[in-house]
Length: 85
Image 1 (cartoon, helix red, strand yellow):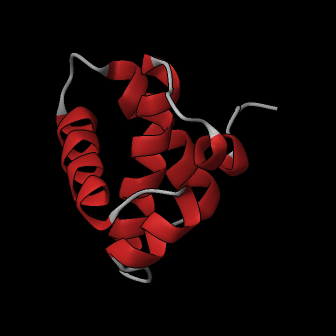
Image 2 (image 1 turned 30 degrees about the vertical axis):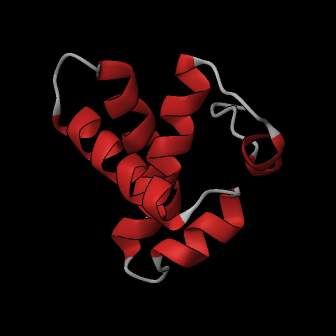
């Protein structure tokens, strides 16, 4: 499988490594970007608080737009292609 992403792992894990945290942030950003989920819905799904979701969105948005963080941008593009946002 091309993508290694487990929502339950993100929800149940207390602390995430850098790569896993970036993946979670991209998922949070994509869910928010669709406009179908509120910050509260996303937080409930991933076990985050409302304010944490806002910070994760901000972090992912900057990572997706940054050329330096190509792994974040690549992961974003792969997931976006699959779910056709």
